[in-house]
Length: 139
Image (cartoon, rainbow, N blue to C red):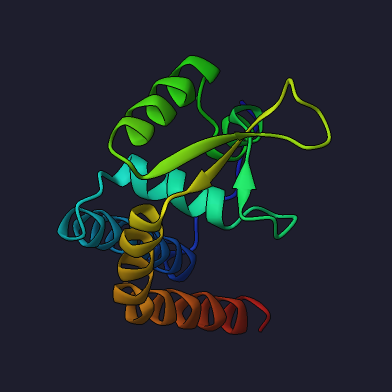
């Protein structure tokens, strides 16, 4: 390891507050998801499908593996359980029939919407904290 400069107390406080806020946000997200009948992993799965980067509101297992940073077998199992629970459905790609696209069902849409709306205050707090940190670190 290289020799690092001693850590400034103010910097340590700032990083500790950020970690605390992030952990609080994640824990609150888990509780809200559970309140709406979703496990934390299913919540993330539904969110990544609905929030596909291309705006299509659908995704493939491969894309989800990358975005969730999980093993493909883990994502495949997660998808299968969400499909069995009636939260997502598969459809064949019109561009490539070998590709299965995953899309939320009405029930998946409903549960995700409730969860996302219930988290609005937590997202605002997290964003404000990030702005405050950016403001202080640019001084």
